[in-house]
Amino acid sequence: MLGRRYDDQVCSAARALEVVGERWTLLIMRDVLLGVVRFDGLLASLGIARNVLSDRLAGLVEHGVLERVAYQRHPLRYEYRPTAAGRELAVVVVALMQWGDRNVPSPDGPPRTALHATCEGELVACLMCPDCGEPARPGEVTTRSNRA
Image 1 (cartoon, rainbow, N blue to C red):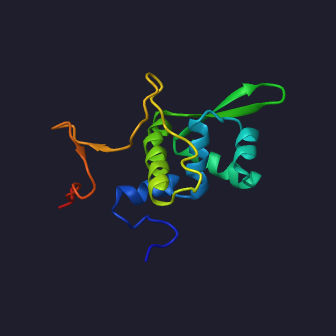
Image 2: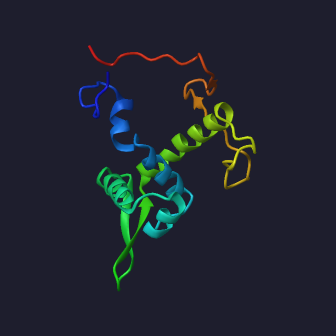
């Protein structure tokens, strides 16, 4: 059984969960990626407790997922901008959103659709093989151990 931390797991997914595995963290990243980058905006959007939001933001900054940037000097206030690592989480957020739309659907349909900013086509999260250029469908993914 997994404990509260995954330090003994030799697994990239477990290490990633140490950074983004708490439910509020992915919801914070969803909102930041949508452009809600100020503390008060996140607080209002998420309905999260101030201390929980503060803790999660501090952790995301500590792990290099967000950067804290001053936007006002008097009083000093910050916004939270995604780093390159944070922007990469868009793939995870979109994949999770689309999985939810398919497997835990709302009776009112999907609340949001991911679009390509350039052409406004609907995006589809998928695994793509860089060697052959083909998408990998469910059941076509295997792994190999890189440990001796």
